[in-house]
Image (cartoon, rainbow, N blue to C red; front, side, top):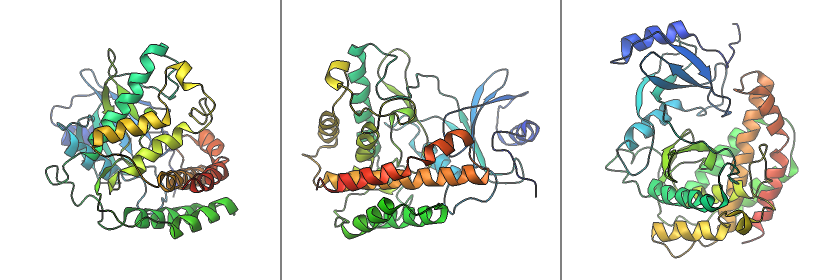
Length: 344
């Protein structure tokens, strides 16, 4: 079987399928692949009267339960017209024979995209409000009524961290290319320190960070939260910790963090201010044992990046060169997770 190129899209097949399945669709179409994103190849579809976005699974052999574009489609459809801003989704194609893998089509949302949390594009006086808006929307995600949106069965019940650590350990082992002692130690520590189930069960985004959001052009307001591949029903503090984890990375386009940045001088939110802002909006007084949630965030990101690296070696990565570069950071994420564990 010929290996498919994940950067290519059979436009004739897409247009034929959309003609039959998307009411109001009118071609012809052209496509542009987005460079951002490492998991599901994403394309802008241009027609004479509309702009769409197509997200597809990568072709080829994939890790079990990974690249769940059908779940992305479901959660965004459920969230449309709630307090959580998302793109309007239209159709899901579950027939792999159309383009080689499952895909869905949604509207393109116009807005500003910020790749770096340091927000160099903005004046210093405009940056804090963007971070604060991230806090507001995250609290909205966790405040979604699971029953009213039909998402109560979107993920299993029970201890979220127990099942997530188990899931990502399996994913990591399936894509492991070498022994990383720090990762093995972090997995052992997490399994030995899982908090008791406190009953909190909310929608969880799973990859909440500034480059997975679009902001309105004329004000610090989120226009759409993107990339719901890792979403589930789970524990809200994992998303909060994921933001802080990302900010702890070195600055710049590779790691996209804020380590070493004088945030006050640059008009940026501190970790403490972000957590406090979130807690105020969520109606809680604070987050105990935050070091565990932070260690978990590092662990999960290390496992995700290892999977991206393995796909690059297998020829299935959306951006192979970037994926290979990312693979070198897995040990650093694992070591950072062990450091976070010591803060409990």
